Image 1: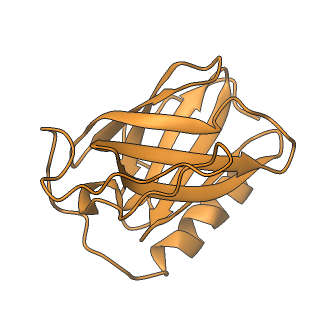
Image 2: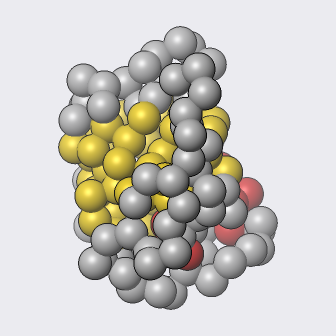
Length: 151
């Protein structure tokens, strides 16, 4: 599984795209547009630059990789969880909306509580609650990432 996660990180490092050096931990951007929800699903209007990139967490003994490129988001976790969706500003908040192939709703909707150049905290509406991610730069795992018990 670790090889699969490393492969996913290598692929995301090659995708190019926006620069994520903007350290904004003060909340949503000033130019936020509210989005109407149709059928219970939200569509963020734009992704804040500070959300861009590859983010890693260890939650419940599983490695979790969250990749945000433009308005698109993908999440991969050991054990086979694969989710895709959107990321961006919505109704004055930075939001993530994901659909997982295994039907899990644990990470269906999340609000970014804080983000800076090194970490991002997401408050999921599902049973997971708060999850803290560490930024992965250049396809490399960040130092200090707990890996004990993964596999």
